[in-house]
Image (cartoon, rainbow, N blue to C red; front, top):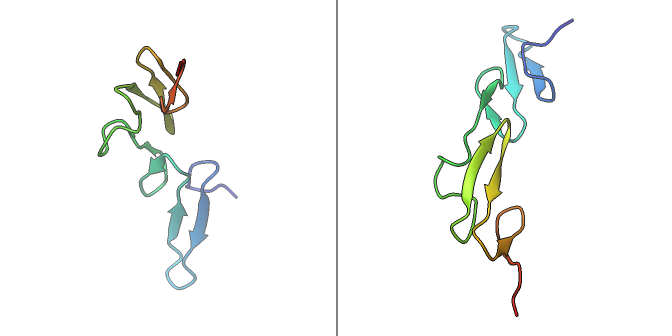
Length: 80
């Protein structure tokens, strides 16, 4: 039996009407969880210290400004 929901998300069937509901993984949305969320354009950028946010499938990456490192550019690369 196949699920209408994207792989990795949970599919629930309403016992009363037989309709499905999908619980999406982080980074996805929509009735079947196939719509990627662009974390870079939703609210404040997740990248710190003027890092450039790049949307990826289901997530994002940060291209850090010179002098910063880390997944969100949260660390000074050379604090001394």
